[in-house]
Every structure is written in structure tokens, then in C-alpha cells.
Length: 280
Length: 172
Image 1: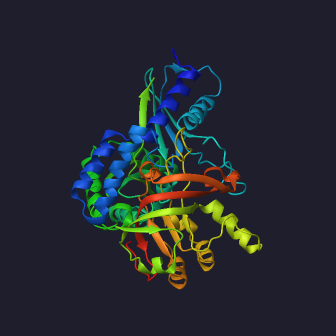
Image 2: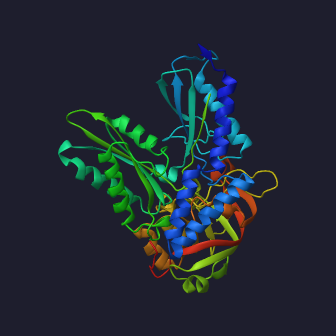
Image 3: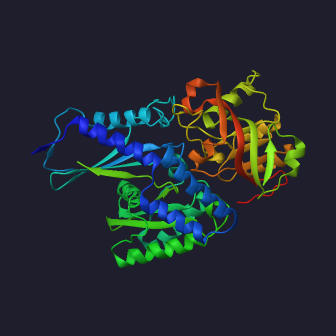
């Protein structure tokens, strides 16, 4: 059995979180540049500022956005990897704590959602999704998620009779309602099937896919394309002021589901599509 | 591009139309939902506010920490609609401008017309760029709120767009 130490996890989480807040994945920044070429008027000026912002953030190591998010972490843990250093969540949270301190990130987490809402001051706890996979590797993806776009996300349990049109209507309705709030141009992550919680996780995972890559199933790939066209016809545009680019991509992930169900989750990602990954 | 300075007079507000590109210089105050809640509690209890709201501009922002050598960290706008329920009261007390992102409620738009105020859109997710236009930052109230405390910021040619004007015009 391969062993992974606490310190390895702390360090990798810390470095990935710091990097993700100041630097976008290449596909995300490229996609904004392409949108800039097509856009006109005030929308073009907004995209210019977004591109300029990426440059400043990268060069000066200042976060792209003041909302450095809740640290959402996806872990693919190889079944041949052993961890013997106690509570593993403690290692993930320590990585986040150190990133916030060293990267001058924002503490954006309150301890209790309803009553005290007291800031935890170090942006912990993070949210970690574990998956056990074959092999002796551990893959860690850190995806800081801001509330502006997260708050505009939605989930609905459709009736199977509502079918394809029901899915399309729900996705479009969610994006239309969100308007300029989630900082468009957005990426729309859609999870279909599974059950209540499964479709939500799928929608979030869909946001991690490289922009421009389609679903491998041609039916879903076509649905992605149709939804993207319809969303960009809504004329929401950059920051909601109208324009050609409301979404940069629609990514769908699906899963088998109950005979009586058709769950759909829509997770909206702002233009700052931050995520970084590493393998241990 | 229109250059404007805070505090805002009625004359400035009346001259601005939705879609105008502006650059804002002068002092503004930061406040998000948690600070708005506290301000409204102070008003309801007839207690003094941390700053005189007349003619002022509130910037909806919770910046990241200032790294060494900088006055502030990343500092872009947050979603304004979260403040909508508190805003008409502040407008009735003389608040003249707001900087944020996203649309506003009908109640806010009506109050903006009634009390002559303007709402500016700054580019969300451009916090590093916008931080270059903030040359001074001082925390003045509610330090217990951390990033949500009220700070007085000195803006220098801060880029924004008039999103909703005092005539009911808007770009959304």
C-alpha cells in the first residue's frame, strides 16, 4: 500500500487554492478572449476589463475576484492509498487555512447559516467530495466557488413526462432569472438524472470540464449545443447589460435514475471559472 | 466618459443617464448585507450612523485582505439585489449612489426616482483591476464583520457604468 502523509495534502491544497484564486485555467481565459472578439459596445468594454483583470491578478498575485469562495475540493482517492495521520478533513482544512493566510484571501464562511452567522475568519470548513477509484494515486481538484453564481443555481425534480422540453425549459428559466447577477459570461453546469443529491454533484462536476469539450454521448452533446444557442439568444450579455455572450459553455453530465424521476440541477459558474488540480 | 466626484449632488445625479460610462473619484463607503442590517437597526433605534449618509455613495464590496505594500486586496462588486430590502430606507435618508452588480428591485427603482439617486455597475470578477483605483482604505465600523465591515475608500477614476438612472432608465 502506498502511504500519503498529512503534510502532502496540506501543501497541495494550499498551493492549489492560492493558484486557483490568481490564475485561470487556459481554456477559461481563451474562451473569454474569443468572446471579446465577437462582442460589441459596452459588453466588449466589460470583457476587456475582465481580460485586463486576469493579467493584473496573475502578475501581481492579487485574487481575480474578492470572492475567493468556499473551497470546494474534489478528491479521487485510489483504493491502494493509505492515510494514517488521523482525521483527513483536518488536513484539507489546514491547507485552506494556510492558503487564506499566505494568499491574503477573503474569509467568506459563517459558522451557522441561520442564527449567529459568525465569520470563521479562516474560510474553513471547506467542502470535500470524496470518490474511491482504482489504483494508487490521489487526484485533488480545488475549485473555489463564489456565492454570486452559486446563489443563482437551482434544482428541480421534473416529471418524466416533461422530458427533453422540460429539461430545456428549466435550464433556460434558471439562466434567465439569474440575469446579470452571476457575473456573465457564465458556464452552465447541468446534472441530469441520478437523484436529488446526485444531480447536484453532477452539475458541479460538469463545471470542471474543459471549455469546448462536449459530452461523449451525441444526444447530450446536441442538447448542450442547443442550450448554448438558446441561452446566448437571451441577450443577457456580459454583466447583464445585453450582448451576444451570456454563456461560454453548457456542460451536461447525466446518470441513470428512478423510473418515476427526472431530476435536473443547474449550477452556474461565473466567468472566473477557477479550478486547479494535482496528483499525488 | 464622464468624470464624477463624490459626494454626489442632485445636479450630478440628474446629469447621469443609463449607459453612461463614468469614472468615479472621491470617498465612498463599503457595506454588504450584514452591515446594511446593522445600519437599519441603528436607524430604527434612533442611534447615530457610522457615517453621514447624505450625498454619499455605498459600494457593495467585501475586499480580500491587503497584501503587504497595498492599501486593499481584490475589490470588485457583489450582487446588489441582496441589499434591496434595506435600500429604500437609506435612499430616503439621502443616500445618492450605489455601486454593485446585477439588477435592482422595483421598490429600489421607485425610491431612486423619488429621492434622486443613481446606481452604478462595476465589472464583477474584476477585483484586481478595480483595486488599482482604490488609493486609501480605512475601516470605520463593525470590525467584527471582518470582510463585511464598513470601510471608507478613496476612489481614483474608478471605472463604472450608469446602470439605473434617477429617471427610471436602465441598461439591464
